[in-house]
Length: 500
Ligand SMILES: Nc1ncnc2c1ncn2[C@@H]1O[C@H](COP(=O)(O)OP(=O)(O)O)[C@@H](O)[C@H]1O
Ligand SMILES: [Mg+2]
Image (cartoon, rainbow, N blue to C red; front, top):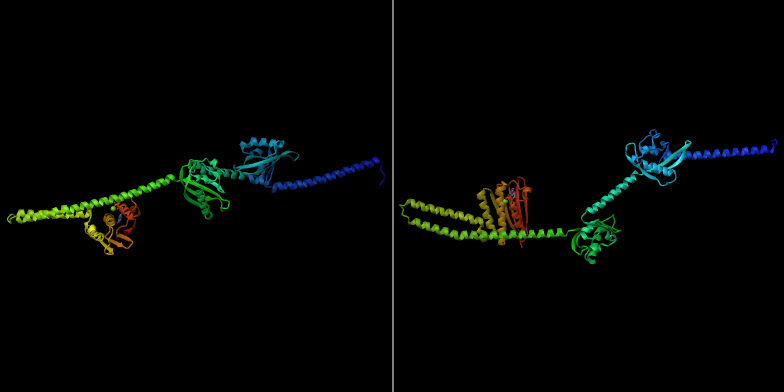
C-alpha cells in the first residue's frame, strides 16, 4: 500500500469509522424493527386487550380483539371518528381525560361507556399514550372491556339492596351469628325486642332471654339440631329490652354446609298474641261445647218431663174419660140409637186422641229408652221408620243386651234418629242396615244406606246442623265419627265411642 500523507490517512480512518457506525446503527435499527414487528403482531392478533391508533381524530389501526368487540369490520373502523365509539354523555369527559394523560397530568386509566354497532353499551377502562405513527404524532389507546365486571358488580349491589330491603320488610327479628356473637341484625329487632339493630352488633343473643340457663338451653338445643339438619325451630319465652316477656317462635338456619364456623341466622317471631288468641279460641270452643252439651241435656230433661206428664196425667184423664163414656153409653136405652151412635163416636175420638198423644210423647222421648234401654228403642225406632217411609230397615245388635250410661244411650239414640231422618230426606234409599256393637272398650253404631251417597261438599255444608249435632255429641263423649259416601252406592255413618 502506497504511503499516503498523514492527513489523508486520518481522513480515511475517520470515514471508515463513520461507515462502521452507520452499519452498526443500521443493524440496531434492523433489530429494533424485528422486535417492533413482533410486538406489533402480538398486539394485533394475540392481545386480550383492545388496541387502536388514532390520528387526526380517526382510527388508523385497530387490533383483532377490538374488531370482535364492537361489531365493526376493519374497513368500517379505519377512517371512522374515534369519539363515535363513545357514549354521547361521556364524550367530553373522555376527551378531557385523554388530553390530561397525553400531557402527563394523569396516569390512572379512565372509565367510560362505549357504544357497540348494535347499540349495546360496553363499559371500558382505557389509557392513552402519544406515539409516532407513519412519521407523525398519533395516539395509542389500549383499553379493557369491563362490562361483565360492572354488570356483576351492579347485580351484586342490587342483590345486596334487595336482601337489605327484604330483611327490613320482615316484621320478625333476624340476626346473623358467628360463634354466638351478633354480626348483623335487621330493623325487626326493634319491633320484636325493642333493641336498635346497631346496638346489637358484637353482642351475644343472651340479651334476648330471661336467664343464662334458658339462653344456654336454647343455644345447645338449636346447635345440636343443626349438627344434623340445616334448620331448627322451637317456641320459647324471650325477654324484651323493656323487660316485658314475650313468647317467640325461634328458627335457626346454618349458613354454609357445615356448622364448624358456627355461622347461623336466627329469626325470632313474636307469637305472644297469636298464642293468646289460640288459647282464647280453644277456651271458647271448649265453652261452646260444654254449653251445647248442657243445652242438649236440659232439652232432653224437659222432653222427658213433658213426655211423662203427657203419658201420666193426660193419658190417665183420657182413660178415665173413656171409661166414663163407656159407662154412659151403657145407660142409654136401646131405643135412642142416635145417642148410642154419638157415644160410640166419642169413644172412637177418645181412642184417636190417645193414639195421637202416644205418638207425641214417644217422639218427644221414647219411655222405653229409660225402661227398656237403647237396644229396644233402636229396634222400635227402626220399625217406626220402616212403617212410615217404606224403606226397609234392619238392625243388628251384638251382644243382645247392651247396658250403657243413660246419657250415652240418649246420645246414641238421637244420633240414630238424625241419621234416619237424613236418609228419608236426602238419600233416596230403599234399604238401611244398622249395627250396634259393644266391646269391653267401645260402643259402635254403624248406619248404612243404599242411596245416592253423600258428597264431600255436603259433609261440610256450613249450615248442616244435623251432622254438626252428631259430631258435637260424639266429641262430647270423646269418640270419633266417620261419614263416608260413594256416589250411587250409599252413605255410611260410623260412630265409635270409648267406654270408661
Ligand atoms: N244419608 C244421606 N244420603 C245422602 N245425602 C245425605 C245423607 N245424609 C246427609 N246428606 C247430605 O248432607 C247434608 C247435611 O246433612 P245435615 O247436616 O243433616 O243437614 P240437613 O239434613 O238439615 O240438610 C244434607 O243436606 C244432605 O245433602
Ligand atoms: Mg239432617
